Length: 308
Image (cartoon, rainbow, N blue to C red):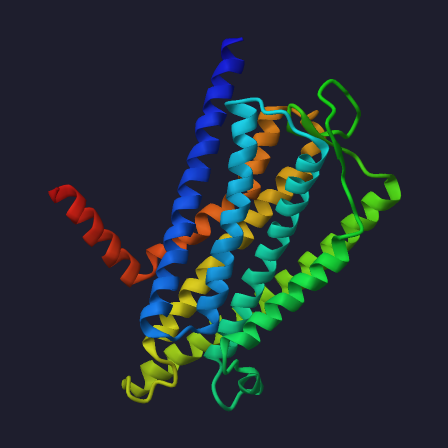
């Protein structure tokens, strides 16, 4: 009893800490880009995708926080519509997050490419083009996954093999053998396609940065540098973001593959949910730590608070 109570309290603090930090970081990142656009009246394609990514992660973490509140604080009564809506919305937002991250990597690779490159003709001259690309990826993802439905319903006192725990009164019944494997194959195909784009674009950016470093060492002149310093910093930030995504995605796959060993233990499922939402929390922190203007604003804001 003591160990179960300890696990319950520990998971509750861990859940709400991740949700609180993630929502705060994504809100700061989103507001910074909004205010920058209002002041400068200029928005880069990568900044637009970063705003969308922060907005998507806000939605994911709000759903996670609502679920955690129902699990650990107040046992609200879930109805079938609320249960299905939150499950579908979180699933689609997670797919949109992968789409936005992949598109962000590709856009930065195109931005970094020299004029002589074949990718130069794909450079977006306005954020509307990158927005259309993102909408296309999202619509294709919805069409690919919309016809697969979880049999979620309100079943508080049912024990079935393969049943997935969401909350005490919101659980997911397993799909049939055919639909489960077809959904798995299509999901893997889509993830492999987007992650493949990330890997190719990241490798291309690393190659360009290494080539630029060699040219700089040979010429000993920054005036002849084909890549500006801000673009280099942005590229390194996105490469770090890609590494963070790949790490969190690998952990999520590892936990998902070992789900059958848990026997639907609520504590293990809570850990899996925290891991699957870890990228939504860590990515804005990473972007904030590499953005000097945000750090200056935060330092000045904290300085004013300490002097009050």
